[in-house]
Length: 207
Image 1 (cartoon, rainbow, N blue to C red):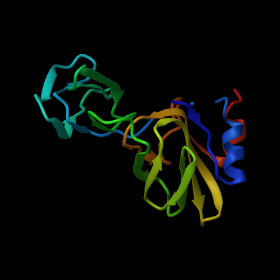
Image 2: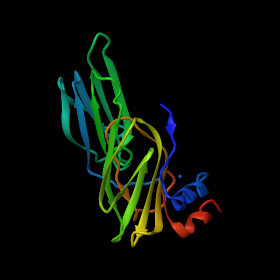
Image 3: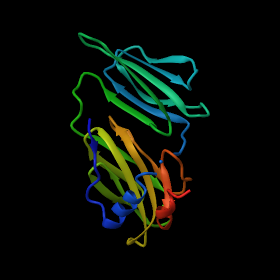
Image 4: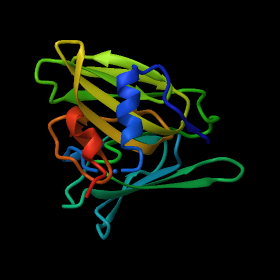
């Protein structure tokens, strides 16, 4: 899979992204992880890095919410897709990185996937969200269609519809299947996800 470049954003947004491209975490938390694995011969789940493995479904797949109580949010999902050569799939992630897993056994890699989620911290404004090549504007929730791959995620908050005042940026994020990706402009700036005011963009890399 090749990494896609962002297209279609306004010049101001592109300038912001370029000015901090050398600069990188956080995310909201959730007590559960949404799992939807269809057609699997077996599905199992581990809450935390050292938690006890539990079988979610011995056959037919699983759809539902599973607990994610580890302080660091880590979990592991494992499932077997049947066939002439059964394939074992293992997902290691945190609930902040991957709050939902959606996979269907037996099919080819989908031509497109859905990336959707909520956008919080708008303070009465709107946001331009881009994952891959297609941006969308929202005042709360968003949904995008894009081929699977690695993308830079850029979301820009606008006050009054015209003035950008805050940015959400995550570089080289992998989207393999339908994914819930939530954005919160009120969260603190981190190393994995950068969240910052527009006027601070040019000073982010200065130490």
